[in-house]
Amino acid sequence: MRRALLIATAILALTVAPAAAAPPTAGVLVPGSSLGGLRLGATAAQVEAAWGRAYGICDTCPHATWYFNYFAFQPRGVGVEFRRGRAVALFTLHSPPGWRTRARLTLGDPVAAVRKQYVAAKRVDCDGYYALVLRRGMTTTAFHILRDRLWAFGLSGAGGPVCR
Image 1 (cartoon, one colour):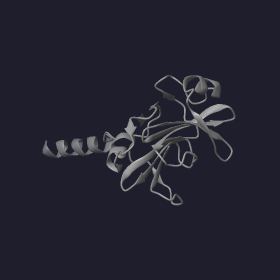
Image 2 (cartoon, one colour; image 1 turned 60 degrees about the horizontal axis):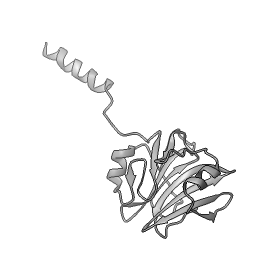
Image 3 (cartoon, helix red, strand yellow; image 1 turned 90 degrees about the horizontal axis):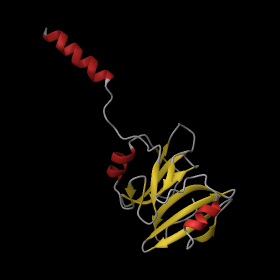
Image 4 (cartoon, helix red, strand yellow; image 1 turned 180 degrees about the vertical axis):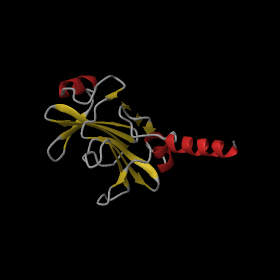
């Protein structure tokens, strides 16, 4: 009887995956505040708790940067940049579906919708695209525009790079 119980426990342990966070397949940008449930200043442990451990580490970035890609070797997903162990930038990659602002703008919306919602946003030209940028206090929110469509979101500390 005891042997059967041990075998059953071992089988259960192998077949039940531990509860773990996964990269968010959808999320909300709250300008000046958070992206995908994370705020600037989050620790690596907090990022892992929220978005999981399935990330790649950029080996050519000037600062520690993690990429949470939905599929291996495909750039769609989210990313986080760290300095001194804290998140200084949170951003989406390659227009992942399901992401929106609190005001219900979704990635893929026309640039006119972004301009209408965030009239104070200033244009910053990047290489091959541009960003509409809101600066509030110590936080920069970027709406990346490609081919006249909302392509990505970015949230960073003041003075951080807008173009990625």
